Length: 350
Image 1 (cartoon, rainbow, N blue to C red):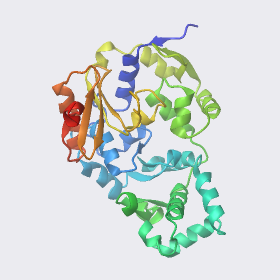
Image 2: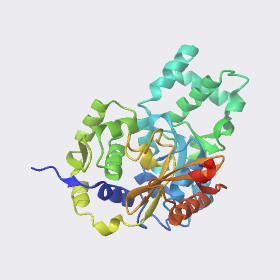
Image 3: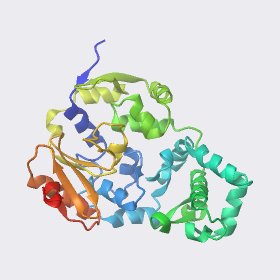
Image 4: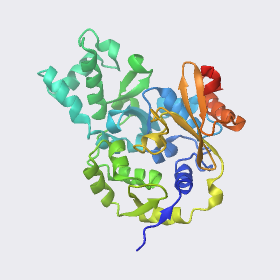
């Protein structure tokens, strides 16, 4: 049987519709949880990264929409999840994400075991004694002077489902005990088969190396995980390496209408789409998860970054496009970020 061939715009358009960058499936929802679920979580060392990811998909977004879901309704939570990264995940799926977090959890455990004669249960009891209500790095400073040890103790507790994020960022982040904050005991599930399936549906076709990088496993392990979902091979025009996706999703992709590729899409720096692939959509030298994109009719038109100097847009064809600048400005403003949007050459003075 011949391997189906699809174009890059065709692939992007289906992924964009699946993950909310195109279409209106997730507009006007009462909670961001369904959108966060299809994204496979939103990685965010800073909460503004989550605001940007959601603002790029929801035309009426405001930061309060996410913060209320995190802090009041608890339909989503922020914790250390896949690859040990801080991320926003659906509360109903937290156990699955904690199972996936277990891939990298031994790293913190080995470090802490080497620094202390306390085992994990004893470290958890110490954390509860030092911080019976709210947990922060400052509250642990006197008892645990080493900053890395404090951080890894928090990660270990979070990946065990004992604590979740409550407020603040970086050194000022505050965590709460999950049982009291969420009103239930949280436990890691035994496997994360469903999360892998969600990834394949949202971001397929993909290489085994993409899943390996996203999940933090070896390429060989990623191939085995993909095989459990009975993936089929797909050839993307211009690609050398084989890519794969689930059979039923492949049928949808092959028949994807060209009209659905149209529109202007802003992909913010640090977006889940950029984390989903090892190199795809990482443009130019140094381009990676921290470099956003703007696509017009599913074809890359510009890249952009967000710094203290503002949002700087670099056009791939060398010409400025007012619609691109306007689209980036809209996402930045909806995310609640005060930043001027400029063409990169205008900022650098070239």
